[in-house]
Length: 364
Image (tube, rainbow, N blue to C red; front, side):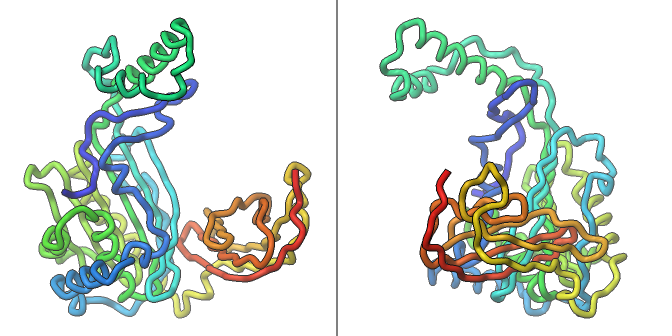
C-alpha cells in the first residue's frame, strides 16, 4: 500500500467563510507526515538495513552527479503552466539530518477543489452517528442539546461532502550539503512516503530513468496512469513531484521548469557563506509585556537576497514557541538544551545547539 492521496472527497472543518480549515481522514495525510530526524524513521536495525538494501538495489552509488552546489531556486505557482488549476495551496518548511548535517526541505501542496455535483446528505451515516453517541461530551446533555449537537455535526458533514478534490500536486525540494546527500535524500523520502509499502515497491521508484532532467531523474506512475511521480537531483538540490487527477500531466512540465531554475542558479564555492546568521543572548524575562515568562533572545539575519521563512526551536527535544525574536521557555527550568533551526526561502539552514541553566520560572 502506497501512502499517497487518492483524489476525491475530503473531510473538512469549516470555520466562518473559509472553504477548508483542516483536512483529515485521507491517505494523503499519512504521506504528509514529516520526520525531522531521519534516525526517527530508521529507528531499528531492520529499518536501517532496509534502507541499505534499497540504496544498493537502486544502484545509487553509480548515479551521475556533478560537484556543483547552489542555493535552491524560489518555487511558486508561476512555474506551473497549469497554474489556473490551483485553488488551494499549503506551504511549509522542515529540517532533516543527512550525515549529521541539517538539510532544509520545502513541502508544497497544490490542490484543485471543486463544488460537488452530488446531492448533499440529509443525515449522518449510521456508523458515524453511533460513534458520536458514545462520546462522553454528550452523555449528560438534554434531548434538545443533543439534537443541536447532532444538527451541528450533520452540517459539518454536509460541508465536507460539498467539496471534491479533483487533483493534487505535491512538491518537495531539499537543499542538501552535497550532491551525494541529495541522492540519499531521494531514497530517504521515498521510504518515508511509501512507509507501508514493500521494499520492491520502493526500489521500483528508481527504475525508469528520464535522461533529459537533472543529473539523475526517475519517473513512476500508477497502473491506471492517474498518479505520477518524478524524482530528480541536480547538484545538491533534490526534487520530488507527485501529481494526480487534473495535475497528472503537469508533473513533467513542472519538473522541467524547476530543473531549469536550478541550473540558472550560480554555483557557490562554500554554502556556509549563504546560510543565515544566528546568535543567542542570555536568558532573561521576555521583553513582550504579554509574555510573563523567561525567554532566550535570538538575533537572526538572512544573507543578501534571501528571507527568513521559518525559525524552529526545541527545548530538551520538545518544540518551543518562537515569537518576537525570542524562544519562550514556558515552565522549563534547570539545565536546558536548545536546538534552533533557521531556514531561508532559498532553503539555506543554520542549526545551532546551546545549553543554559534556569533556576527561576517566571509565571503569568
